[in-house]
Length: 160
Image (cartoon, rainbow, N blue to C red; front, side):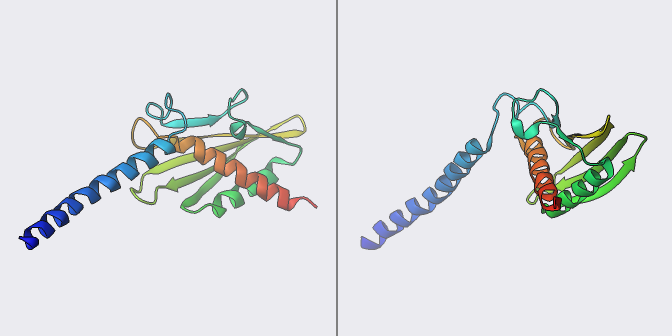
């Protein structure tokens, strides 16, 4: 009789563990979403002039565009799971491209940063796009925020 009770307790405990793990995963997922209106329906993000999030504002510098391009490359290479793709130079524009690979599911995001020379100043803007799906769960804005944060750190370190 005692043995049967132990089996029921073990069985109940075994059934509870997956539920607890699922509940924890759901809580983490809910906390991970930044913008419920955007993150399920949009799979790209841009750095624009009138951005509500200050981390996603364009960067305007007096430095030459080529120096910012080098800084962007360094910044992107500092981030784990990011790979530098290349740089394309036009007359007044430099494009620096990266690919970010998700650690778990191996999804890829394409990040393209644009540096434009405008009257003695260089303006850094860019965009991030997911290759798969119709919602990015906020990943693309976080890609741009991370790259801009790293770029600012690189530029701060370069100042005399």
